[in-house]
Image (spheres, rainbow, N blue to C red):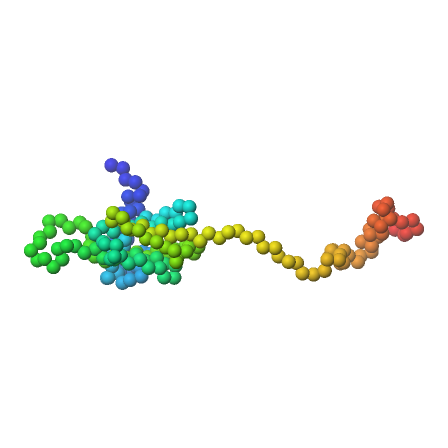
Length: 184
């Protein structure tokens, strides 16, 4: 069986999440709560299209009203809790329990140029999709005024050498040659 990089990267992220929980290290991006409170770091898909960024997370077993989505200091945080239906029932014996239950939280730093006041979230079939509009800046051309005199260019004002004066006199007679009777 061939393994793809994507599955290896996913397994690596799962291992990092596990290490964060076990050792309370907070290596992952955006751990804003204590590791003992959060059971797992919610995996997300993030992409952009046209003038929007999108974040999508699978939250099976969570009702939309039990999700908490906040934005503070340009960091979007998605959190909630997945509870299993047998909580407190002593008569239940599990043969296998592979589904993750408990609190989850994921914080994601947003790009600087987004409209945080226009972020929207939609919930469908166990997925929450967060739509973040980009702040589109129109290019502006600004004319910069120039202060100062417009009489003679600065180079002509600074040229006071005798060679420059001789060149000016040649230009003034229109011949390009030195005027008659001038000493070279």
